[in-house]
Amino acid sequence: MRNNIPSIQDSGSTYRSRFVQIPIDLGTVSDPVRSTTRTSSRSNGPSRSNNLTEPESDSRSDVVNFLKHHKVCLGTCGCIFIFIIILLVPLSFSYVDYDKNAFKKNTMTNKVNTDDVYTNGRYFWGINYRPVTFPRFYNKIELRGNDILIFSDNGLEFSIECDLFYKLDPGNLSNIFTKFGNNYHSRIVDEIKASIKNTGPQYSVEKYILNMSVIHKAIVNNLNHDLSDFHIFIQPNMFFILRIVYPSSLKNKFLETAIQSLENEKSILQRDLDLIKKVTEKNVTNIRANVTVLHNTGKAEANLNLQMAKIKSKALIKNASYIGIESFFEHMNIQNVSAREEILQYFSVLDNTNSSGKILVGDIGTIVV
Image: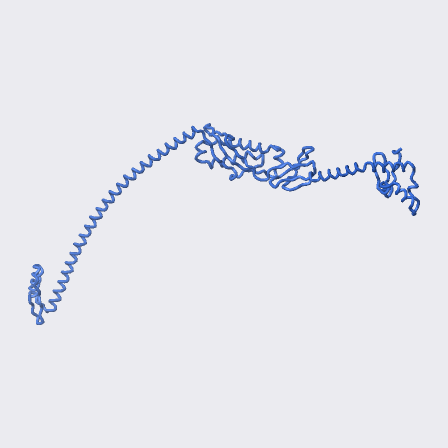
């Protein structure tokens, strides 16, 4: 009978159920007696309650009774619904940390949307979405102990310890995730180990010991070539060779070689020292000989200068004597040749005998010897 009852539109709210859809006046729900009284006492127009059929009144009574007996259950369901809403809203937010980049993943289908890269922040994606994160900054790889065992060009095996830092390119995260998924880091580490091992046999042990800068440059170049599939470029200052662990036999061999090299250098230095001593002694002898020659030469030149001075002094004396005699003859007005010769003989006697005699000339022209 209830399925045949039509839906009646009224100014009140409409209650929908699985059985029937009828209009319900709010006042009627709370108190059907008061509702009937209010409806019948209306003065404006005919009462609508009087127009209801008997089945419709029975249906309304059933609904009212249902609501009165199940209002606790309905309130509980409403509270549960509100609680679920309050619980689901925070769970619909997803967070990306400051040091991460992320893709959006549907947790129900496990499908990852690689079209957009999300940086740090809070996103309202829904309850069935979670971020798939990637490091935003540099990742450090430490290779220690026997992580990398390489061979030199002569087949000697030794280990190398190093640190390096790499950074994922945000523009190529989609390609990296498509090719390698979440295992990209382990694949990168394996590729780095393989690249360093392949570089090792290109150089000798002596090169590793004496010229590490060449090895460093070659390893970095090969790493950037081998990591091109990951769109990773390692800066030279982001790769560090910490140490190389050689076998003890190799250490002893190089120690003996180093000792022998020092002995050879010592012999060469001793030979150079002996040669320098010989050259020095020869130079000292030559210097001493030169000193003697210079001394003798100086002495001879001094004697020569002394003799020349004596000759010059005698010449000056002779010249002075000549000038003095001429002045004497002129002063005495002696013009007679024989007289001059006689006087010159007196002067010659005085000069040759070193006599202390003197020739005095008087005012009257007399000469006293």
